[in-house]
Length: 285
Image (cartoon, rainbow, N blue to C red; front, side, top):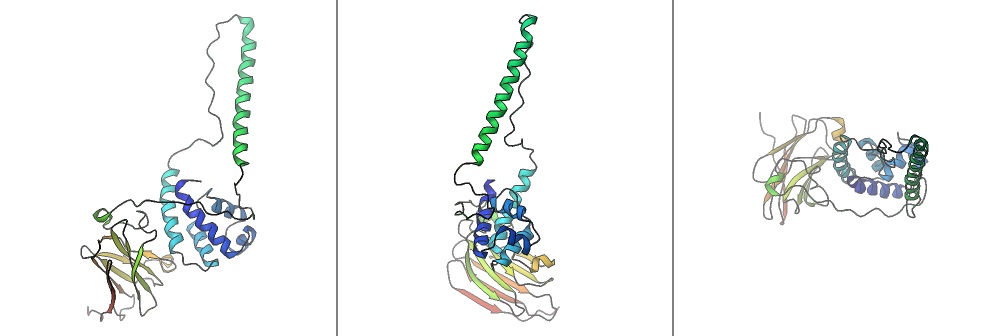
């Protein structure tokens, strides 16, 4: 299991436990096989985004937290996949033996000795691999009781101005942020103003949207735009780029629905202070 996949696999195991479904039942209710779910829950392979969404649906869990962890794992997994790694458990090739200097009659004995040593090396490596697989506490999640998720800690990768205009998920700012306020729009969309003290930055999180909806976010500096472009965007949380924000900063998000006659609605909040929500009339073209 890779370091970046630990929190995702742990969260997936929690959801699977909540559903009470076996791996076989998960396979019946989703598009992924029993063996695939075993790999996803153990962190052996990165699940597709759709698999995460389907498990959230079965557990009646909003996909935001899980998809945040998936984005982090996916970005790191992609970098790791670009590096060709040796096969785990495969011993390195033995160096070619030096040309023997002994008499011709002893060459056969030395050849046999090298073969014996090589065989012993392979058996030793195989024994270590099997021993690791049989260590107590290892869980293959083949319909066995679940163990507690592995604790994790991921440090943010930017702070303040360094976060401006960047993705809160990929910069690990989207884990346990504060929700400053939530705007419930007339079209049924939700806009949350969020802040990460660790990153010194804020952003807006949006869901329940329609294709063509737009959000503008600012913290008193540059404005950052978000447009709902695809059907996938309407099925999950979507995030604006971040804006640097310190305690006392005023952050603001304005939602404009895709419908031409829809009203622009705005939410405003002060980091560390009370929140206000306002509705603005549509702006004439």
